[in-house]
Amino acid sequence: MEAKTNNRASTALEVFLTAVSYYGCPSRVRTDHGGENIEVGRFMIEVRGPNRGSFLTGKSTRNTRIERMLVDVKKDATHPVKLLFQELQSSGLLDVGDETDIYCLQVVFIPLLQVILNEMMVAWNCHSMRTAKGTSPNKQFLQSLFKLQQQGREFTELKQDIEMPIGFVVEDVLRENQVHVPEIDIPELSDAQRERIYRRYSVPSDSTSNRLEIARTNYLRARRFIRFCLAAEGN
Image (cartoon, rainbow, N blue to C red; front, side, top):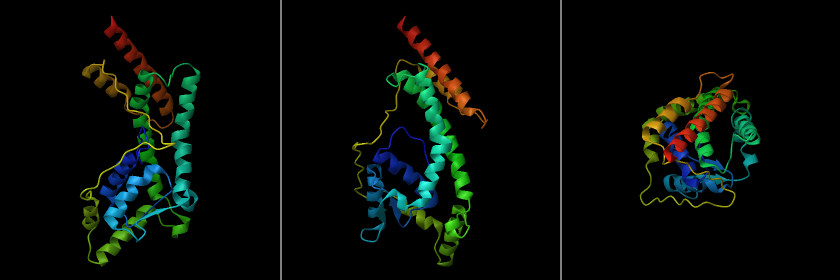
């Protein structure tokens, strides 16, 4: 899982290939009918072949494990951050039409969300699954590697499958209902100012008890610093 500013098909493919580079290319992938999955589907069919179920689509409710995980993602990651954004907005401290405010949100909260998602991935990969006889995703993965070894194959054979097929072109067209928040840059900031912002405000707190409040403070400080820099630039 990776925190991104959009759900473009190319972004979904990028995240998928990152996972493939670590775990190997799966035999089959199941998704819902979302347009953001199109490029992953094209890639799987190119790599694993057509007419064998390389890319399966259906209602999201058919994939109960991922749906259960997404409940936890919403509860522990996205929903608390959403509530904080709403509080900032109602307090007049966040204007979604202001590029400076969006820039500060991305600087502060994307790294924080990534830390939370990383913690969730570790917990998820180690939890026991009732429908898998109590085994964890990590244990299932290791068992699969052992079966490969018994067959005289190596994990590196799976990694070799991730090479982009010749002639594979990613078509990145925004479709209806797709979310895209552009990555904002403020060209008026100097490199030194931009480095200071990331160094001071983009690093999530190690504390798990009040890190959202710390992130809120970092957002406001980054926002104030950038407005000061822009005002000084204008004088």
